[in-house]
Image (tube, rainbow, N blue to C red; front, top):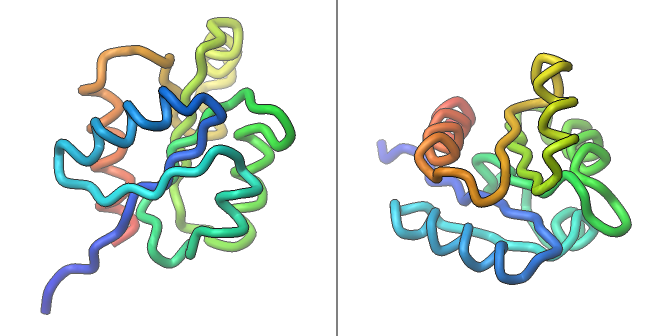
Length: 125
C-alpha cells in the first residue's frame, strides 16, 4: 500500500514570499497549496489533503494564531508552523516556549524550516 501523500499549505499575505516558499518546498518534492489569507485557506483548502500548514503570524484580517485556532477545530492533528518577519514576535514566542507551535524568522536559513515541515508531514501520515 502506497503511503498517503499530503500537500503543504502555505498562508502569507506577501505574494513574493508565498511564491518563494512554495518554490523551496516544491524543490524538495512537496506538493504545495498556497493562499494569500487565512480566510482563503479555510474556504478553499481540503484539510484532509494538507500535511502541515506554514503560516505568517502577522497578516491583515485573520492572523496566524487565529488561523491555527480555527484549523485545530477542523483538523486537530494538523501541525502549524509559524513564520514571521517581526523579531519582537520571535522573542515573545521563544519566551513562551513555543507553546503555539514552531516559529521561524522569515528569510532565515531554509534547512531548519524544511526539517520542521518534514517532521510535521511525517507525523500527519
